[in-house]
Image (cartoon, one colour):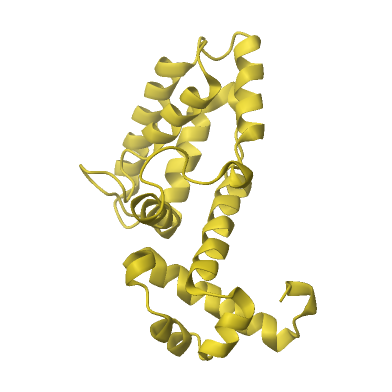
Amino acid sequence: MTDQSLTARGAATRGRIVDVATREFAEHGIAGARIERIVAAARTNKAQLYAYFGSKEGLFDAIFLASMERIMNVVPIDATDLADWAVRLYDEYLRRPDLIRLATWARLERRPAGHLVDEAGRLDDHKLRAIAEAQAAGIVRPGDPFDVMALVIAMSMAWSPVSNVYAATADEPAELHERRRTLLRESVRRAVMTG
């Protein structure tokens, strides 16, 4: 069922399902998420959930795709300043740690190696082109654009929920976040920028 064919009430129900399921999948993963908890918290029923998403896996796919699109749209790449992009990613992980947790569950439960999504689902073509153009202009160090992007993203996630050292939260003091932003900005600048 497409969003266009939904009534206002149906769209509200679908939205509640997505919100609740995002939290459920982020906390429990794909295998641990329970449809019963989702429909109870979303004030709906299994039939409605399955009508919208087809299956538990279809629901996860919809949420995961939306989370990837959100990161792309909220934190668009600026390959001429990858250090600033890394800091903006850090800030988004503070605002929405659930997005990183969803990606982590997808990595753990679906794709332990290689790209996180199928080739058709990858949304990084424009990022790779931007990095390649910045490399051609002499702004970004030479190397495979994908590897440069992966390095910057990994650096931005140093304090994210996937860190095996320390997971930061938005509740920590602002000066602590500012120190991390400064370190991240300078480290990315030194690692991948030429100027």
